[in-house]
Length: 127
Image (cartoon, rainbow, N blue to C red; front, side, top):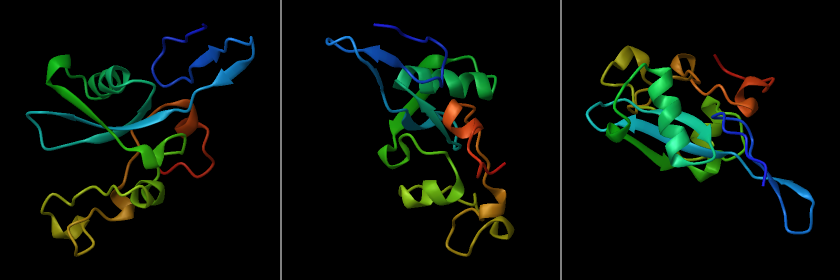
């Protein structure tokens, strides 16, 4: 079995019959237990998703990180519309000028912190 240990890269598996098969990239909602924020990342495992959050936000305590699956974004670029279609929307944090009136963040304030192959090569990547 060939494994690429870098976070966010696709995992290539060699099957029993010798053919190479790509595993889909899983989407995760990553947060720190003591914080009110969360972010979306692609990774093959929850541990790699938490590591991406630690690295992105310069945090130090892996045990304080949580990663929950968001299957509707598997193998799709993380964009405002894809996240919304998967059933996820960021809250506006109580700042009505950033929200849509329903407590959700406006699309213009959405940012994608994921640096995986899927998100970095998407022609529709929202910054």
